[in-house]
Image (cartoon, rainbow, N blue to C red; front, side, top):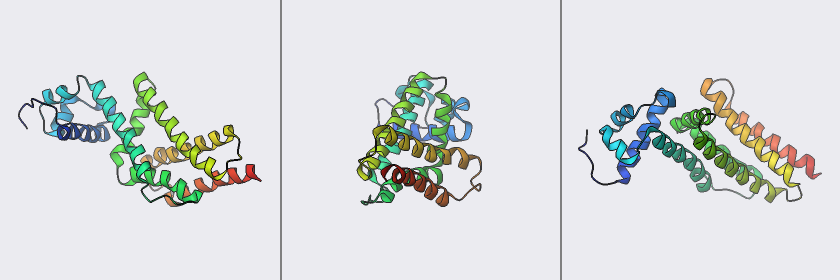
Length: 201
């Protein structure tokens, strides 16, 4: 264990948040304890309380970290965006796939925070903002490729695509062998493009 810290340090805060994600993945939020996070981060529990006064404060910081990671990955365009709609939609799919296959603790935490948000207004607010941002980003893509579509239909298609992406999380975490992810996401794109085509013609 490290000695007591006397000033805030970004690297220590990073360790705390990553340790919290590890504990949430293993124990879920309801089983997460500050002591477990301190042990995982190899810090004294008092160090954790220096950064976060309560478990609730820490959980909100972890939730914001997960949501920010989603946005950052989409902005970076895991594969540089092309001009066609497939390439644009692939940015969202790539972010979800990376969570599912490479950043599993982020994906597990996202789902657990969603469950907690049913009873915690602060977490619910974060999710409302996050999902609205997600729908807005997708709607921007759809408008670029089908500017003639009415806004209510664009908004519904964006919401549908979010549901397809999040539906992969819910199912994949329970049974990763249930279906082929590539085919699932390709079908999801096809459904969205079919909606755009049906309305545009």
